[in-house]
Amino acid sequence: MDLNKKYFGMTVTQIGILAGLAGFALLLFCIVGYLILGKITGSSASQLATPTVSPQPTVTLVMTPTPTSTPAATPLPYESLIPAGWVQHRTALFEIWMPVGYKAAKTTDMLVTGLGGSPIMDLALSYSASSKATKKIYMTVSYEPVTADTLDAFVTARLTGLGLTPSERNKITLNTVPAVRLVFSGRKGNTDINELTYVILDGTTVWYIQYNAEITDFYNALGNFESSVKTFRVVK
Image (tube, rainbow, N blue to C red; front, side):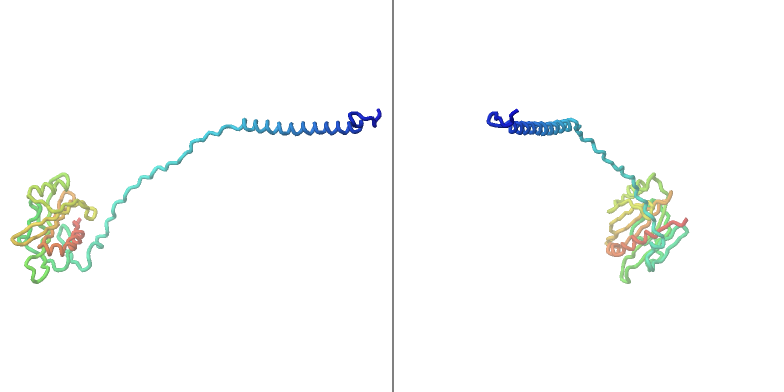
């Protein structure tokens, strides 16, 4: 073959080189096309293979509240209830403490009659607020058997029977013992008086702790009355 002979203006050598370049270009195009097609196919397959993730319900831990109970009030030591300098008044059945100056009194001198139906008077004391005081402060302790199913019902029956209406009436706990606190307001002669009465239930016995005085003396001594009744306790 004449290598120098020209075809379409090119020698055989030039045509061979051109054909080689064309073949190489075709091969390169095929390789690139294969890679691109493979990537697209792989990507599609990957997307098709990816499962749809469904949101799962979240488990929430609910803490069940622990039942709690309010602890019962712890009674204070009896000695801590006695104010400094006070005097003990004791009988065969109970004891109670009062400020200095209270002395034994006649029940006929009382400003107000007791709340009980026919209570047994076990202690009666009186005190003069000053040397010029015309009326004394009185304190009494009496008791009688309970005649109702509950203390509240008993007090209601007593008040109804005596025709008394207290200005204050409250159910309380006195040193862990159920009690009813009553305040009465009234007038004897030309004297305005108040009476503070505690009705205390002890088994089958009802105790009456009563403090009464002219209204000014009453409010001046009210703090002492409140402290005194806390020192009342039955001798077991």
